[in-house]
Length: 420
Image (cartoon, rainbow, N blue to C red; front, side):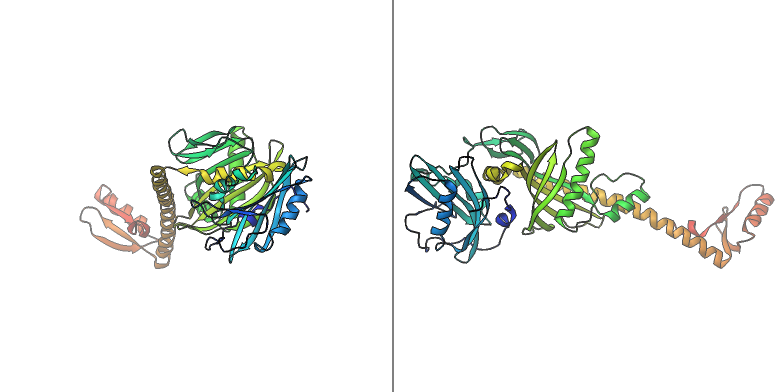
């Protein structure tokens, strides 16, 4: 088997709408056990045998052994092995009972025994069920659990949610459901949202309000373009604070995801970036909101990242942390209200700017109308009576009338003032 260090994760993680595959009717390959749990969907197919050798060779053999169990696979997306070739893991995808599935295949060798396993579920639910499925074969002589131990439910310091993290991990930031954590396997940031301005709205605001745009500027054409614009905005802010910046190196793959109400597009984006001289691999979920009448929209994002050379090995742990994060209900409600308020404030700025532009256009129109008509309204401020005078002589007429009265009784009223 040709092991690749880089993992094309999005082919594995793309969400499909469909039923959870049924495994009870499948013929289990000889020598394997099919382990399930009534609390979760999916299953764990595992086998233990005597012998020694390399983990990668054993896993290549296992792929052949289970080919009749799966339909259209299993197809190895990519994976890793340790330096001694005692443990190997592969992300795979396949068909099962008419549904698309994905999972992790592994092989362990040691002590004269080799163990192989296939942990799988619907691509729609795998991220949530993976932790439990990995634990099912503890009594079968395998050790498939990710290397991080002692998982614990850790509340956010501000009480806005929680996240299940292993030893060595700490929550570095939390505020109203937005949270960040880091540990030996990488970093995670979740629940980030920001108001983005379309290019037209930003140009209008700059022209009429004379103020900088308080957020990223980008049209919601596609998630990758939006992510690039958002990253550039963050880099500029970090530069001003003297913080580190990210340089996006390459896009590995992007896969669309189902759209939730209130948003127009969603996708998983797999890419590499460089920060502080080190190369990272990142899997980021991005949602683009609908454009409001004010020309603004909401960008929502969550991501996990790890040093590129260890991304494949660390991905199972990162996915477990990602899938475990929870936001308190009161924070969800407050977040929705804040988003609506921000959009309303942006809409008011846009309305005022648009109103000023329309008023200026009306004044210009009225001035030209007076020129074409050749007349202007004169008013007697004492009686309120109004009449028309030749535009070329209106100023002189008003001046002479006021001189005769001894005070400013008469005045001109330009057409644009009448239409205010």
